[in-house]
Image (tube, rainbow, N blue to C red; front, side, top):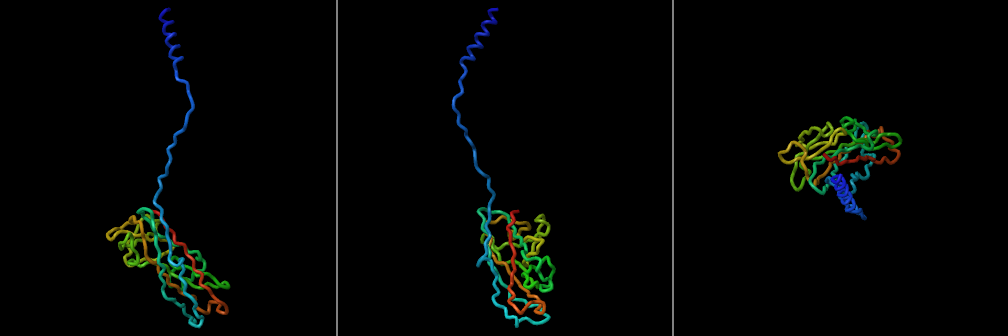
Length: 215
């Protein structure tokens, strides 16, 4: 009986000596793991202006091809990262494939006037017209959603089912870069004059969005 009472008294003394909870403050751990980001830009606002084209310069039965134009571009990233460029035609329903001599996958539209399609154009990039971090890269393209890549040392066109990317001098897959500069070429072909409403002004209204894809 004495042993039991002694244990009870000890337990009571431990309880009475326990610390009493006071005010508290919360400590938080914050931060964000952020992937590199890139900013694309075009010189001159990204406008390829062909100026005034006299209707008298159009020949019946023929598509008029205008001189090629180059639009300088740059992609600036805050750290090296693998990227590609993909073009989307904002005037796809107006593309005249017969004017460019290729199918709708490669032909971008120039808009419509009075319900008539104005023509079509191609977009592309010369292999030697680009520098990546100050060096000359190899150009690649993919037609399967960036799963596989093909070297195109002769340059590449922006087809609607493909993306263009870059790699090092001996690479075969997209490589990471911080700065990409170069030029995109544009070749415009007009519809035959007999298919155009030439009693009024016929503006060229091509529009394409070039999107940077992070790989």
